[in-house]
Image (tube, rainbow, N blue to C red):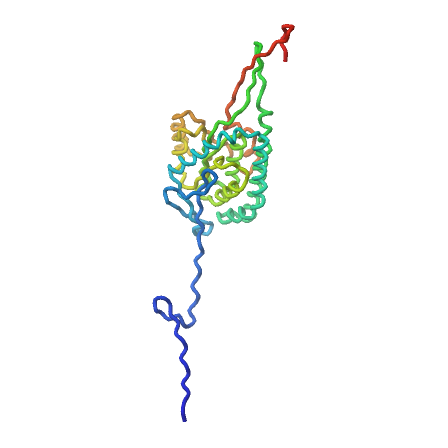
Length: 320
């Protein structure tokens, strides 16, 4: 009696020739980690240094590849900010208000993403939702002040001669901003908004530990009506970027959050190179009312006083 031979099962093998038959478990997928770029002149270049670092999340695992900016990146950002000063300061205060309000609308539309990123950085869901809501409200707060602070703080000064004497506020120019990192979004918004509301442009160094919301904010700015170069944002190490920021001769003022005693000594010394103003915000809680005020706009403003002769009428009396 003849026997029927069964056909052997095909042998599966990987690229190395190893058999893959059997009950071996499927290899765990490795997620594709996002690489975040910096923001200069309305564009997203990679850092010229080619260096990156990986901030850790609440679980201790790397969150992303984040640019480790260099002195050259600071210089490039200052060039972009200086080029945008004339156009931004020359816009009407009402138009700046419209643009900031539009950014607030866009922040509201991407609030879920900001909440998610703050949670990745260690905030609870409730804390993240509260911070995002406060950040949006604060941005709108300064949008409203764009065309009002001049009326409140400017003045007509008394004289003892036949002249009008006016004092008005003008933007100081390019402002460097160093974030501390107590939170990733609210502090950032609280530092940027009053600076640009007053017609300045800025170069911002984001929080070293919490950079994700900062980069997402630049994505909002890039797709808004804000002209390129008004806000430029760098990520990287505070210890590497703070000194190049304050020492740059084309930066007119710097705003530094949570400066240590050693940093203040360095900042005050380096600022003398071009007599730039150094501002240390006195805010202990960025979610409190003390963290928003039109006086923060004045921190990066200059006072311009104008004398104008009074034209006398035909009768010889002073006319107004």
